[in-house]
Amino acid sequence: MPKAEFAFPGPLRDRLVAAILDGAKTATTALLTEYEHEGELLPVVGERSVVVDSDGRPVAVIEVTGVRVVRLQEVDVDHARDEGEGHTTVDAWRTGHEKFWHSEEMRQALGDPGFTVDDATPVVLQRFHVVTRLCGGS
Image (cartoon, rainbow, N blue to C red; front, side, top):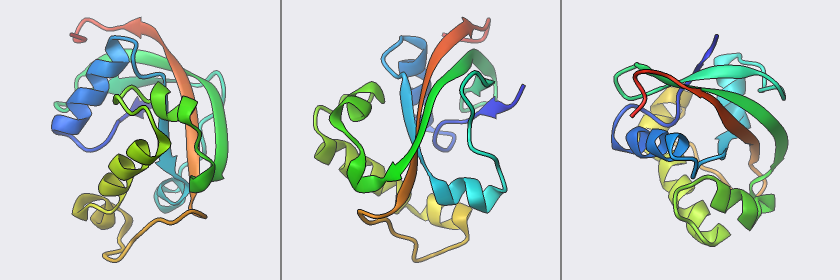
């Protein structure tokens, strides 16, 4: 089963994994360019993957329940809330995500030191649910 890695290892990943395990996080957003850069196919409804924590330990199996590609400006408040990070507005959600997408780690991962997003940037909105919590899950 493929791995599902949320953010980069560290405090953000730890918070996101905890939100998945407690049921607060049922959605996520990625840049379409991430998939293209990695040569990965977009997720498919029904596809399952293993969520790993910052130490690479499997903690849960999730199943994709929805996938949409939209422009960044089309992300709605329901999706922002369902990401489980406590955002109650799209503006707050976007501020947090832009900080991540404009980070040095992301720019290095994409091989583009000047990478930025704007309203027209295509993003992949994914919905999922936890199928199984694994023994390593806290």
